[in-house]
Image (tube, rainbow, N blue to C red; front, side, top):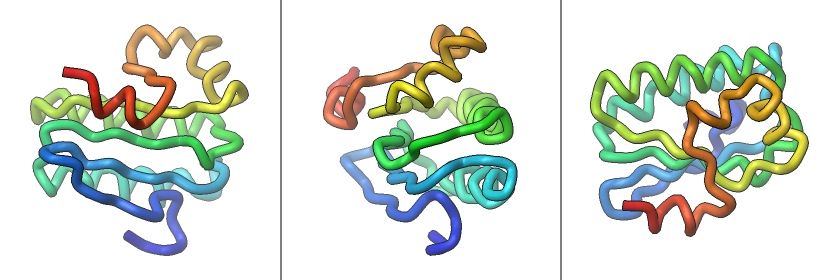
Length: 115
């Protein structure tokens, strides 16, 4: 992964790819984020866990990138889970009611433990 994009680290946990995101995901970074996120599908994981613990802010362009990833993931039979959202980022999903579309987990461990 590029050191410039929001996805800074990707690792395998069994058949699950865990992506660590860092920094704000806003209009200036959403294009790089979307490219990086869609590239994760090329690795053919069973699941993708996006750890958002180090994402203090996400705007609508970042959310749109995640919606696109979710759509593509479902087409490929890949489960997408979002973990460790801070209250500010979580509120964006709640306000838009996307908390009922995405699987939101409190921690990365909780996401990895889901069957």
